[in-house]
Each structure stands twice: as structure tokens, then as C-alpha cells.
Image (cartoon, rainbow, N blue to C red; front, side):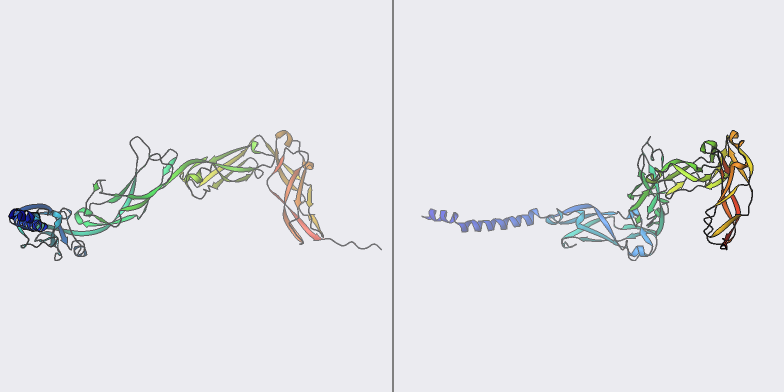
Length: 430
């Protein structure tokens, strides 16, 4: 009977609840008094935070030297296992107040320690040792200065940066200068910001946003976390231009008994070296300096012509003028006094009279033809169509025709003087 009652109590739900509560209480007492006892722990690598370094010191033109900005602290702590066992350097804040510093130099400063998660010093945790006891802060003068950006085209060993027949223009940067700030002993070493473009066999312009490095006057790279800049990248353009030799030439107007086959043309210089956008320069093969009428001279002509360079192209040779000489070969000249003067296209209602009654003309052609030409073969013809309805005397251009000898022609320009008068009405017959 009693045994049955005992078994019933042992197997009841209430019994198990009571036993569980008692076990939990015993376990809690064990953990608190045995397992969660006070322990010590050393934590290293705790970063130091400097209060006022980025704003207040900067306003005073001061800065902490680079080697001071990465200082750490080591602490030896004592506390309950439950608090210290999982604590790391990230759970601890070490702060140094710099707001009262106004001069450069090395200073020993005390620091404050705080714990995350609401843990209080001298209540939940105790600091047994600090290393170092003080933080040494080296304060330097803060300077700012603009640094010029420069570029370097670099290719791998044995390769060419720019393809044959092309050339690189000067680098273009935006911005052209970078403002740097930091400790005087670091910033004073910076000579320029260098952008290195690594390309091979370039035939077109390179552009894009690129990084740079600071170098000193000897070309050595300067790296420091203390250097502050207003931009990490710059817009870089490296223009690539085509280079081409272009021939200089002149146009010839045949006349005066001469054709291009009877001329020798020399141009000095014969070619100029041009550079420009490949899209423009590839279509330019010749530059025409001007047009020469070979009927204007007998045997030789020399003149200087301006070398007109197309838009978007640069003349690398530097010459701005070219000297052109044209020489006639294989022909003879002869002077003849011409008396046959004709006028055509006389304005309606007017009569024209030649004041000029003869003109010496120079003819040119093959020697055997020139020998046969005489005054009766030559006509001086003046076109009066441009005079209009006006009376008076005028000097008008005239052409020279050589009848019967098309192989020859007149050399030079000719004018004659004519008078223009109204027609007289004829009287009616009786």
C-alpha cells in the first residue's frame, strides 16, 4: 500500500517539476560559486582614439604624426568569467583628448578607458595593469599645398608605347593640381602627382579616370596614411596623333604656247610633316599652294606662297612658306609689233574707236613655229561688253589671237585704250 503511494508520487508530473527546480537552483549555485569565479585576462591591440585630431587640431594647423595614429594599448583585467571570457579589443574604447593642445612637439597624455555593453569599471571589471601608462603624442605642423599632376606613358620591356607613324601629345588632366595636406615633414617631400599609363602600340587617344602616386624630386614614391587629398583620381587624356609627310604642289593654267609638258616646277620645301587626328589626316595627301598662269611669264617665275594647313592639323616641320619656281623649257619667244586691233561686243547705240593703234606683243612656241609668225598673223581683240552705256575713254583688257598657228601663244597681259561715243543719227535723205 505504502509502496504504491511512493511509486505514484515518484511518477507524478508535479514530482518532476519540483526536482527540476531544485536541480536548477543547485546548478546556479555551482556556476556562480564554482564555474563563474573571478578570473584575469590580458587583452592586447586595443586601438587608441584621438579626440579632436581631425577637427580642432586641423583648425589650429596641427596634426598628429603618422606613426602616432596607429598606437594600441594592452590591458590586464580581472572580473567574472561570464564577463571576461568573450571580451575582445573591440569591446574596449581607449580615448585621448587632444582638444587643449596648441603647440607642436611630443607630449605624454593620460587616456580614458570605457567598456561596451554597459560594463562598469570597478563594479563589473577591474583594471590590474595598463601598458603603456601614458600615450605619447607627437604633434607636427599641418600644411596644405597644391601638387601638379604629370603623366608617364609606360610600356612593357621591348614594346613601343606609340605605334609607328603616330605620336603622343601632351597629357591633359582634370584637375591639373591636387590639394594635399598632412605633416610638414611628409608633405614637403612631395614634388608631383604621377599618373602612369601602361599601354603598347597606341594608335588612338587614351582617356579615363585614373589613380596617381606621389613622388619626390628624385622620382621616389612617397606613401603615407597621413597624407590627405581632395580627390583620389583624376581625369586623364593622352592624345594620339597621326604623323604624315604631305607633298606641296601648285596648279598650272596652260597658255602662251606652253603646256605642263614644257614646264619644270620646283617647290622648296617639297613636303611638310603634319600631325593630327587620324580621321582628318588620313585623307590629306597634298597641299596646293596656289595656281600659276604660265602665260604670264616668258621663261621663269619664282614666288613665295603661304603653306595653308587644314583645320585640326599641326605643321611639325615649322615652315610657314614655300618657294615655287616654274621654268619653261623647249620653247622660244619673239616680239612682234601688232597693228591689227579689233573690238567686239560694242554697247548698243555706241560706236567704239581704238585710241591704241599698235601694240608690241610677245609670242612663244616651238622655234620652227615662232620663226614663221609675222604681224599679219596677230590680232589684238578687245571685249567691250563690260563698259556699259557710258561715253568716254577706257583702258580695257585685250586678248591676242595668232591666226594659223595654234602651237604658239602670247605671253603676258595686254590692254588697249578705246573711246566710246553715242552713234550719230544719219540725216534723212531729201
